Amino acid sequence: MYYGRKCFKTTVSNLMSPKTPIQVIFKLTVAICISLFSVMPVTSVAQKFIDPREAGGYYKDGNYLAAMKGFKDLIRSEPNNVEYHYKLGMCYLNSNVDKAMAVEYFEWITKQPKFDYEVWYELGRAYHYANKFTSAIWALNKFKEHGNAAEKVKADKQIEECNSGIQLSKYPVNVSFENLGKVINTPYPDYYPFVSSDESILIFTTRRPGGPSQEPEVDGYYSSDIYISHAVNGVWQKPKSIGTQINTPDDEEAVGLNPTANELVIYLDHIDELGDIYYSERKGNTFSKPIRYNDVINSGFESSGSLSPDGNQLFFASLRPGGYGETDIYMTKKLPSGEWATPQNLGDKVNSPYKEDFPWLDVDGTTLYFSSQGHSTMGDFDLFKSHWISPDSNNWTAPQNLGFPVNTSGDDRCISFTSNHHVAYISRVHPDGFGDFDLYRIIFHDNQRYAIVRGKIITGDSTKPVIATITATDTKNKSVDPLTFKPTKNGHYVMALVPGIYDLKIESPGLPTFTDKLIIMDLSSFQPETVKDYSLIGQPQQPVPTPTPTNDKNKPKPQPANRVH
Image 1 (cartoon, one colour):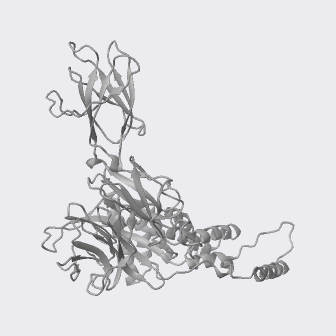
Image 2: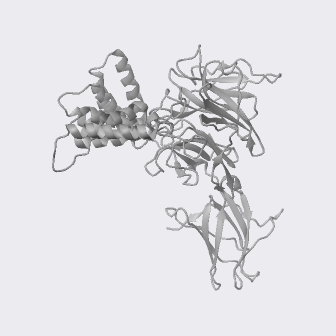
Image 3: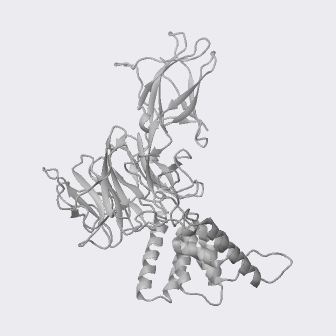
């Protein structure tokens, strides 16, 4: 499910409005109960009446979680009802509970004597989300046996995505995912994360309660607001609303951020304002009231955008005449006057006949990240990158899929990298998450950053060579074997450690074992080099910090760690 770009605002049912007289609701309830009682057969056990119109109303309004519960109850009372199975399957496909759960309901329908052939298409989609690509292709081909020309084109697009999924999943990217935890995430949708290049500021969109909106919208979620968190000592702090100068009872979404986090791009979905992008400037810790980009940029339907690192280019997604299909990526350059020049479409290397969205130019000034429903996507939106061949031209390389599992068969629409390319932030639905879209930190292990910890082991007798073993055990990642390091004969040691919390143990013959807790900070608190001397003499055994030497001829070169097996 995609939460943005709503074209109108609706509140919850008028029946639940505080403006409705309670007497009217009471009388109406009594009348309905009397009417139902008069027509129900008298049985020894009272049977709960389930009104299909309630579930149908939720379904029509897009409140699929509420509709899901209703159709489950209806299936329990009428287990052979094909319509209820179909709509429950569609609830799963249109929600973020677990789209693969739709499979069993569509499979059941295909075993019935009569059903609409459209079910084969939806079954194919459900298999696709479950990463059962071969089964999805089979179901989609069954759909094509009955479909018209337009429907066959639709199925062929889905089959092409499944074939991409088969190939991409053969060569997974070496990454791992860290859920940002309950400090950041909630059971409600948390999505579109943007991080500053130094990983000190995190800005994202959420549909949690507690904002200016007092009631959920018709789809069961609260209106979208923008929240911000700051990293302190390598830990993200509890996020807060970015401020009432931006967040309102209507919808606001963060859709772009420059690397220094000084300019935020915002999409507004208000009753009188939608389909345009705005910007907000940061001064200290405060962002300004959103300012609309001029009509050169906002001339069609604009959904997202971001400034280049030098602030001289704006990349944005727009649906306007002259494009290649749906939303395309455009670029505009800042003129000497400070105004924006006429935007350029990035061309058919980047843009496809399908939707492109969320462009973001890397800190290197040449790598463009964006999402697309075209190219080699393995389902819905996938994340891609393209290189700007020459900043003086509009020439771009063919897009490269960021690979599986960065991309999935689901909706992968937005990614934000730190300056070292070792870390990025995305939003994702996962069975181990908090219930809906959560924010995740991706670690690209092929670009793994590490800190150098070096210093000297002091054993007391400088006339004898130092014989010692240093063991560092990562307390957070139990699957990683302990690392061992050997100092040189004069006691100098060098360790290369990735961010984490380590139990340090130093052993030397004839001396007590020394233990210490070593913390390698992450996020914006990361320090590439630390100097620590350790004395194994006497009690208590505490590390002795020393200043960083300016000319240490005895300092050994970093050595790869030997793993203890």
